[in-house]
Image (cartoon, rainbow, N blue to C red):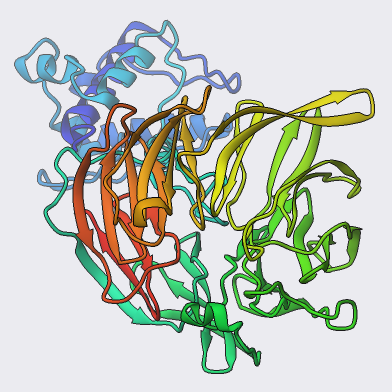
Length: 546
């Protein structure tokens, strides 16, 4: 893009200067009392005399504190140096009122218009030096670039720092649906990473993943664009699976969380670790075998920790004996601990209810709310599933909590407070759908989920009443991870089928079905703008919609 014309603007500056000097006998400078005299015959001077006059004028200007460049001596007619004081440009200037002057004086260019306004002042105040001109242009270009960068940044995908996405609810706000969905996805890269159901997390163009390689748990960092490893740390973790869960492997199953430059992981056996995300350096580690007889629940630790106000919150311990605990995220020191029940397989959420910030989670036998600041139990509601499989992450809808479990109805309760007394109240209950390992999502008044009934089927409920709006056909799979992105649902079944469906309260309406892996997919997909991260049994792949 051309901002100004060099020759025209130089001539315009000098002609205007010459005209001013004709009309006044002396020029009062704004930075001092010095004056420069000009004769009426200035236009008749030779090139050498002209140079002397300009030189005297500039010396006077400098004496007043204005930094102006030294004019060059008479140059060749072909000189093309950008300097308002170039003598040859005066010598070859267009005549007053001539066609060349009229062209220069139209001020079509940005710099010409600016100078025209400045030089039209009653007093010829100052002319910018070359450095000033380019400095001004540079500042404007920098500001324009900053606006563009900011606009682009707001359009980019959000970082994925924890379980179920940016807001821990399976809802993406930074997503633009393509006008036409591709027939197939484009594979950008695929790398072996190890086994486990833990979902990846993403921050600042890097992917962080917790996996298992033989008898070691491995924490890895990869470049998002290329899949190349950045750093990797590992530690030995022997583990024996419960025979009822052998098909799910030795984990890990918990999704890490990123906060303030730290990465926090919770292993299959309950080992809690903190790493620096830039280097992978271990900051601190907690192991709980001296505090609890068992350090993980029946089928291995699978709750994903959460960070709130400098506190890392995790339910540690094992079957029948554990503690929902808040650790200092920086040092690992215990802030508070509630030991009312053993851990479930559900992950906690942080919500505001009745004016109190609280941790809500399914433990081994209860749905509980605990004050996030001091660990005080505020309320609890009994909830048990067959074989102690409380897995579903609770969901906040307006001011009610929605939860479910295997062979249990999907339920909604309201939390009431009267002074220091807390209680729970059932709002609705739907026995037609129940959830096993899937956690639901909500958009407006529509609640979407995946029921284990009929060998797996998607459903939509009215969040206000719990009424069933639709259910899909059965045999969709054993499990599905669900995300809401704009006007669509991303549904990843454990059979490695990624379904894109319309977010509709009237019917189940798939748009596209994509095959994204050759092995089971139990981890959550990660949606990053037009890119999708998929973790299967032992590999991590980045797919693109473009």
